[in-house]
Length: 306
Image 1: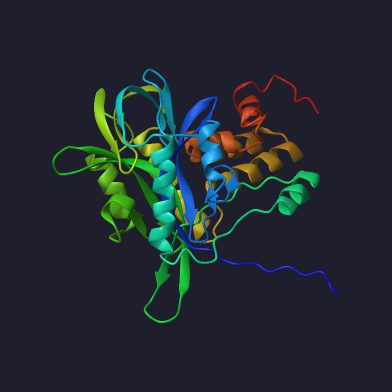
Image 2: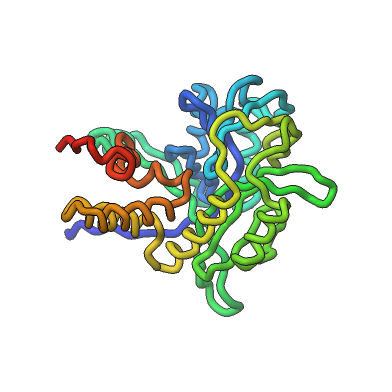
């Protein structure tokens, strides 16, 4: 018998949740119709309660601690009204699965054999939820996207944290406004007008739908509106299969290392500054981040350790 494998797309939805890993991180947790859950790990519906009980996934952030919101910044929780405790959040996730799979058919359960197989191979799964929309009226063709967080202020002035998804056809959707689509130019205009923003005004009530109502204040790092616009533009390029700012900067870094001179350094500087500030940490690996880029551009007298 030949050894083979197959791939399968499993649909689902995202649910706001909080990961506790030294700090507190707001995530869009993938919950799929087969009962699997993406919470910086992969687990099944029965195992999810263990992630809650050991504090990997939590239902609240203590007052005075920071909540880190990917693509935006770090915000101090001044006070909060959280909607769930451990048991009710577990029930909530089961209800979400039941909503997208009313028959609760083909629910996936991790076997002990699987656990032992992946432990032996030292393999860990960190599945990524891929946003999509259906293209056209005929067939089932998926247009994929990528999401980031942003604050949305409604007509009454109430502030929400929502996701902003850019698709490969360069359209944009906000989770809070449903299926309505925006162009890149319309999205930039919403940021410039303040409808979309990157932080609360002082200490302000913020709603995270299906999670809680928080009073947040800007406390640590927070990206700039202009940098958020750059991020959205670069996402559109990446999804369209074009070279984005991170790719261009890594290539400029390679050219400089091959031939360090004034021209290649200036070329690298332009490429580095084109990368959104809050994404420059991704230019290197988890340990070095953008340290070598900073050394070349701002401390050229320092020698690189090889």
